[in-house]
Image (tube, rainbow over all chains, first blue to last red; front, top):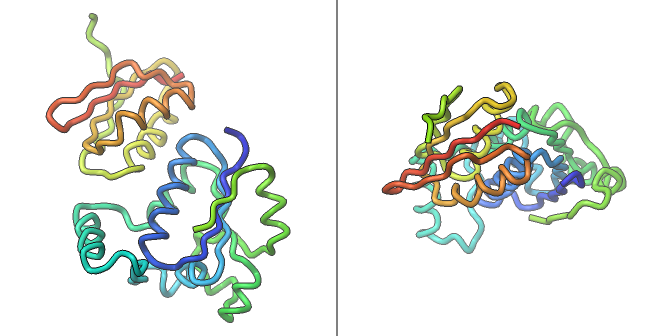
Length: 137
Length: 78
């Protein structure tokens, strides 16, 4: 279990980010390192001024899906950012912003939530990924 | 069977996956080797999750039980 799990987050909706946070926390609890690479709309959701906001749901959720997600949150499910925070406390979780996406969105490192450890390019991501699986969400 | 002496307890009732395991992993690393941790949870995935987590981390799953939607686990820190 020593090879890292590598998650590429592209989508910025709360449901996909929640799913990614669950995968991250589960791997961290098993002692498996996790590298998270934030691209495009996922990176936008990690802006310090937006991370706590409503990022909507994937189109397939529909109204019934939205009600289900709200019900789970009302029952006490931690928001995805909080799940990631706990995962980072628990294990080796490195969250990096994709430098191309930083340019695309006109962001600087100071614009990002402290959950994000740094900014890197795809080469550094692949190097850190080693032989571990890469999952694109 | 002798009564087990529980060193620490985690109440994960009402928490959804993966929080019962996250809380367990957080708690067990503060404990001494050989000490017992009791976890109560309501997440239906927790039976398989606790078995898998114990197998993978080397901590021993001493007890695993279910009663009316409530799950109870006892783990011994490796």
